[in-house]
Image (cartoon, rainbow, N blue to C red; front, side, top):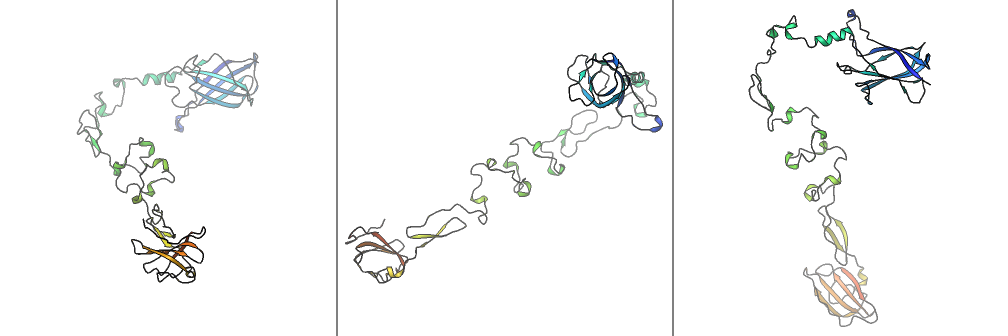
Length: 345
């Protein structure tokens, strides 16, 4: 199959001045399409691309028209390359054609066509370079052919530096000249701040609170090691690190908000405690070879030989009067515990 473009015309349609409506940037393109040297008829997909060179491979823009009707070779399409496509430089048009609705590729027709100006366009190009002296109805301020009317002096305002300017000069932003009150709401976001540009020293106290932080925006990786300590947490919400442990014969009763442990002695049945040399040991067990030591807090410890079970046993007093405490068996392998003696660490 061979497609070739035999004749093409470009028409610019201008609206009537009485309508007072803008022209827009669309143009009407009309051409004649031949198929194997015969005039084509039917529906065709037509793509028209704009180039700035006769052989440039990359187009400036392309306009697609689907299912364009072609009768005896003649077709008409609307093109709109925008208001910056034609700026006085050479432009070339390339047509690409395929049967209507065909998913295959386009066939590029050659050669590309040079877009030539209309007479009115030539006149507009000339008028754009007219000298001041060739203009009529010039405002009074420009009658001397100098554009020096209007602003006569400029004073630097708040946040600016540069002083009074009467002819020429420079005004710039003064150091620390832009204050928060000068910024519009949401004018400065993360995209306007360089990485690490804002440090803790540049933030006012309490300037950043929960309302100023996006949900899930502060992650563990963004918190420096040791940045959060006991002074930065609320102990009524977060448990402080637990310090300390319960001693032997004691159980954990609770943990305070400050992380201290509260311990108590394990309970003991009184009928398993014997009355030796201390008043609170109860009855039911007989023993001898007693040794008593007193802790630094005046709580006694009683070690004795249980002659009913032939075991070495220990009674740890819970208070100074030894009215309660914990009874434990230290050794029960055979007949052990006679002539007991203790030493406190």
